Amino acid sequence: MPQKINIKTIAALSGVSVATVSRIINQNGRFSAETEARVRKVMEDLNYHPNTVAKSLRQDHSMVIGILVPDITNTHFSRLILEIETCLFRFGYSTLICNTNEDRELEKQHMDALISQRVSGILCLTGNRQTAAGSIPVVYLDRRPDGYTEAEDHLVESDNRQGGCLQASALLDAGCSNIAVLYAKGVDLNHMMRLEGCCQTLAMSGINAKALSVDRVSAPLATAAIRELAAQDPHIDGLACTNDLLAVGAFLGLLEMGIRVPEMLKLTGYDDSPLANVYNPSITSIHQDAQAMARSAADMLLRMIDGESISGKHIMLPTRLITRGSTK
Image (cartoon, rainbow, N blue to C red; front, side):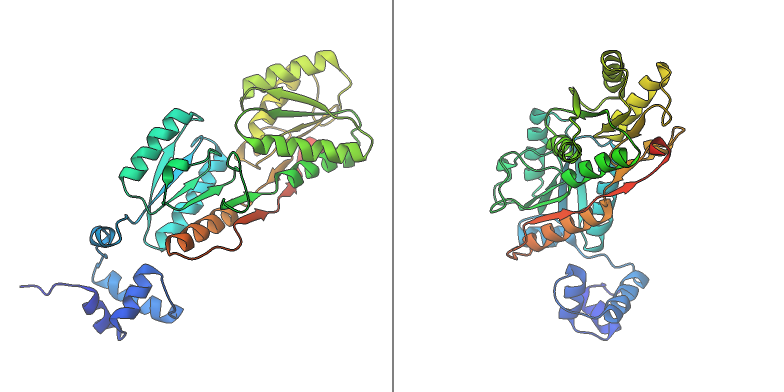
């Protein structure tokens, strides 16, 4: 009968203790990179996989992390989730991705499902407070939860006000003096912070920005809004959009009206998504470090799962301007 391969087998063949193998599997405790490589090579050669089901029963939670995302089709969220999955997989965790479609009732149903699955923790990108999570660790990523407090909530975000300031500076540096800001109102407070940062920077230069809103992030809505703006004020020479999809919608509206970018109007977007490179000219946009955001959030959540007391509950990462043809 073939010998049963278990953690003791891996330890014996690796020349380390059972405790060391356990620490490597659980990514808990100290061990050298050389030791980890040797142990994982033995595990790979023997096609050994830890029994996560048994571990889940012992710990009363699964080796699964739930992710609540408002719109999986949004490239910014997709990049965050890809980085999160990559990071968590290294530590033996799988993910359950729940798309809420900006619907609180649907989000509640997903929340109930995650609790019934006994997930180890939750990464929340929706901005809605997860009171139903109870004792399950929750880290908010990208969006601040409603009623956010630094004393209670664990949050990783990029500096949206700084991003708005960078947009304004780009338009000022390009010589614009009659500037509008197109933003999406609603549940995502990031758009409001970008609007504030942009308007504050413009005000410091003596420019009273025209704020233009749409109900949600939508290219057709942005196209309609920019048509209305151009009809009211044909002398607009700069436009900051708080999202790349809004910038694309505005660009198409400007194109229809014969307003050339960047000759007649300079344009900026936000998120540095693939959309920014689709059109000619390409769109100047604000880059958020999705990799650093995802890794910081995953690390914070894993430490919470391990019972650590987190002193730095709020991580804010800087943004940077990616200059392209729309402001040149």
